[in-house]
Length: 203
Image 1: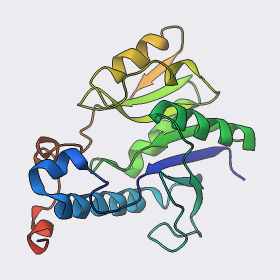
Image 2 (image 1 turned 120 degrees about the vertical axis):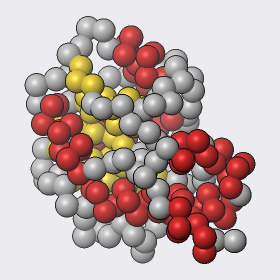
Image 3 (image 1 turned 60 degrees about the vertical axis):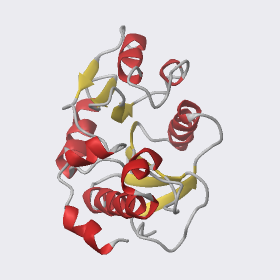
Image 4 (image 1 turned 90 degrees about the vertical axis):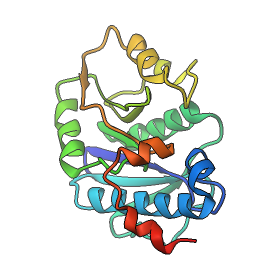
């Protein structure tokens, strides 16, 4: 067992259930194709990182998928809002004995190996590492002890989340990473590095 653990929150890739705001513009089939590519990108960028890695599915654990059990351990997200589910994931890994835990989603074509490795390094001499997203949320959160306050009383999915979280952390030593663009809407996708040619084969 390593000291570092990476938590990856994913949604099970099902038609009509992922990237619903994006789907309002490009349709369910293409939204699913984009999300499938996001999952693959997240896997490619995290697989070689020197830490223990945990994929937390939102509904059902899938044994045979892109997340090889040679590299990833698999868990199911708890019930409740996003804050409750993230808090439960951190709690479970700290209770397993991990000292440095980072959570990411699977919504970021800008995600790179070096970014996560930098976050783990910064966590050695900071209480919290956070990667702000352009939409007012955050795409990465690193902790080395449980902090229930930051997961409570937030309007998850809105532009207030990052600022509200930072207010809760006023007495902590925080490292802020680069602000990046996560993919929720068509405008987000237009600003990303996504290869549009991939959608030409989707009805």
